[in-house]
Length: 320
Image (cartoon, rainbow, N blue to C red):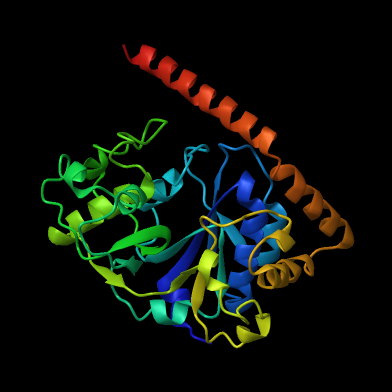
């Protein structure tokens, strides 16, 4: 057992009602390989309320609370990075649609930088698709004239971060931390938190305000299972594969048999179900079905968005 992962890195999983079936699988996969590592969960309630008490009790997961409950696409990650009240250490932040394939932290603790990312080394000139996924550097320079492409982009679904070191003023062109909707200029920052962080982190690197290390510790599910045998759980039980598998852009449904890597997903789901009583397993199945029902999700998102905008107008009038 590597002890340094408990001391140097904690894990923060960001979830919402829609992906809660996957949040449980994600955390079960972490706990399989790391029974004692500190795990936090951040709940975004924009898509509606959902209970996480059973999961948190079973796997000793701490709920990280904010003064806000509603965030939207990736905004909770930026709010987390801006927090100055967290213990000064590094955190592995994760989207819910990720599973551990082995003891990933072993290689991450060896990297000493403030931020550690899984890089995608692309060569300019960038295609329209690449600019859409990440950034258009010319548009970014309108706000950050000293931006220079560092030789890589990165997906923000899995990163080692150090909260409290990004200056809030640097976010002002693209993110209003106090007002929903938090994102600004969607034309320049099309993929929201990902576009923002691929813009400001290189700027802070250049200014000497933070350090970044790179390591290829993530694979995409859409291509990972192209080779035979990758969906065999026995390949990963010794922990030596040391990868994160990210389902961004792939089929995601609580009906796991419809997904790639269904055997891996079912294995980790079963790890969680084994911790529950027969009644708890029935409630879990019902919760997965109810929380994934699209019309209800869309209704909650619409209602909560309207509520936040009305609340903001009231606050604005009170300040006049």
